[in-house]
Image (tube, rainbow, N blue to C red):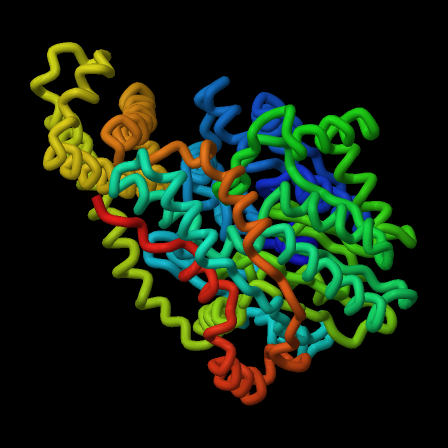
Length: 558
């Protein structure tokens, strides 16, 4: 970004170039600003939506801003800058550039030149970086090329697995007793929710055995070298368990960096409240550090520059945009997918003196997901701009369908006299056939609105009041769906069962030895990496996912 900004600033054909650097996280915004300052380039940082408007009106040469500031600025004042000499350099362009915020940015700067930067582009039809930014600028710089240039270190992959035994008779008996009052649909809903690898990943004995193995693995390979490691846990409570067990084992020092309680952060764990373990931990951290920002930053600084902690335990935070060159090993105790997985493994590929490789140690069986993610990324080699046409046409077609799908949804309730009578809405949906039709229409409407809100043409062409109603109606009908699924016994409130099922697994899942599934292999060595994929077929019956498929019994009918 710095070099491109410099080239634009010195280009004789652009009289007065103005450059706006956009990110979607506060720490990245600061990082960008610091980089420009270090290179002797002055910039202004937008501290609010109003402040961004001020810099735009003053035609400041270089501005750094969060993408959220555009919406705040637009709400304050419908300002449009029609200059064609504005260059918008968007970092992490695979994330927030497919929604309302990005559309608002383009609404305020309709004639700007947009350049997206990403190490993990999205290639899906509905979310495609090249459709959004207008094509790939060649030559693109791939991960493999970066490894070849020694700009980053290669990554070695090692699979490890905790052998588990289950007391199936006890689990069957527990399930029969505790679900006796549930309908067939509710039991199926409960089984679908908890018969997953994530629940086994959170079982106390599994966490303990992994923590013990990580401690020994770290001591044998890394302790005393000055290199650090990250551990990715499947949830906040599990992260604290890892921290506690590592402390009890006493081999490696650790700290936890998580978000506040009740923050979903891309997964479906919801903390129970201030009285639970996560809430207590958070209160302790706020008392110790004073704020979330201070808590996160001080632990990061200790990890980067101090001797302790040796292990940094995270859930979703610090898996993207986190640069710590000493960070050498990533212990994966949670399944990650696609670009999130690519972003996570890149935390350990930074150059550092004496560091020959980054290491991915996998306890969550992400081998298949890693192969899929790398294959997806390699598709860039055969990228064809002609493929964009179909994607753009499909987006426009979906946007065109939005008014009809909105109308179709409301038509189901035309017999209800008062639109705000929630009870009448729920009573109408007592009929199972009508309820199923409602679910289908709501799903179609939700998907179409999501695509529409990523289109700047749609945002610019729809009046504010209608746009607000589209979004409010989606939220209302989603809440209605949740209410009727509970009311008509299609679903249950998971929070009533999670503590009990967690206790069940803690008691009846026995974690034994840890098996090394393969020695470290270079993930960019196609021949060797493919070989371990074939060999790992031998272990399919032992994977955590396979265990999860059988952990819950088939609920009795009736």
